[in-house]
Image 1 (cartoon, rainbow, N blue to C red):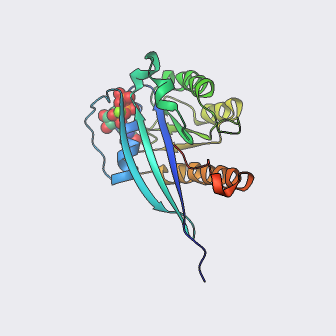
Image 2 (cartoon, protein in one colour):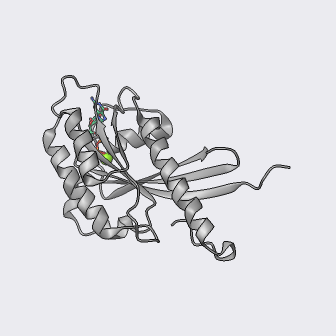
Length: 196
Ligand code: GTP
Ligand code: MG
């Protein structure tokens, strides 16, 4: 007899400076498409992806594509509410976007956490790894990943479809583990683990 299907709804934030490739990463991951044209996101956009994750587990990912210009806005507290995880993206061709990662991480840490008070899992993404030579040293990204307490880091290319699935899988694994832990410590009749 098979065990009942479990379904997790995970809100995932995708943040980082203007033009680092957040929308492109989401488009590649959800629809497997890529465009060279740059159209800045205004405010926030949404995408949904449903995955069969391990046996008997379905993950519904709600991806929040937050415009780079929003770091200077007042809306992020609202956008971040009840997120289960985040991608913080920088552009390997532009070192300034790596420095901004510190601010994005601070912004997330100060405005969102898990129900048990722990930080949400966050993956640091160095995007545009197809641009060689990079403006940003990958070792710097790995060092920053450690120092700032990111869950993990990945060098990706939305253009050439490199490491996008791997980065998302790392995040999903951690989010699912957090939800399972939450369920195991809660009364199953009053589950509070399905977010948002
Ligand atoms: P905002 O919405 O303004 O915050 O920008 P964004 O982070 O969503 O950037 P977007 O995905 O719109 O990409 C900006 C530009 O970078 C576009 O011209 C993309 O085609 C290009 N781009 C995105 N990903 C890659 C990549 O992996 N490699 C290269 N070479 N270019 C990329
Ligand atoms: Mg965008």
